[in-house]
Length: 294
Image (cartoon, rainbow, N blue to C red; front, side):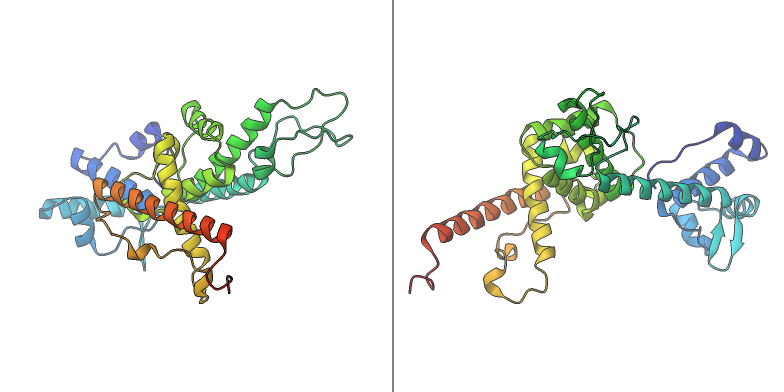
């Protein structure tokens, strides 16, 4: 978990006896527990390194805090309240995932099933195929409402892929709308979101944010190419038919993706390779392969 709510009143009530250094230790242990979603290790030496604790006094304070607020078991120190919050978080993430599959959060005012009206909205059908029909007594759904359902569904895709507990701020939703206005499909936006949320480099560099995924048309296009390549590579893994294999991106120049400039250069190289592959496919489709000519 990258985010959690903090109840100041409860914390002050439970920690009134702590010294300033012990407050630092306890808050750091709380952050560590939420971030890793695992118990605090029994070997306190590694914990001291993570918290930059050095002296014997620090070690004693660490043990005192662990004894005060954590339960020691065979595989680590457990914190009951944090475990409950992590459980609630995953339950909510699962709910968001199911809503995403259905096309977004359910409408507050569900219409009765009496007469269907075709909306003709292709974008909505991509991510919200189960929209219930409206009645003669209701005003038809507007394009804005249909778009809002689609945008909410795509935002739920991000929550599912990233595991982040962020709010659907107006600015974030406007970025999704902007990419839809650019002409990108819901599936393409979902692919880029999933790629940025799960890609190791983005995670390691702290760039696995929804803003980085979709706020810029130019960057979105580059990330879409990379996401498409990764998706195709995964889909074709294990395929032994060379004629059905995508272009081998491994033969192109490789860059050091541990740096921002290197990663940007790698995106550009992948984009060039992707466009070259598409051009070759188009040419083969137009003129036929050498084998088919004979």
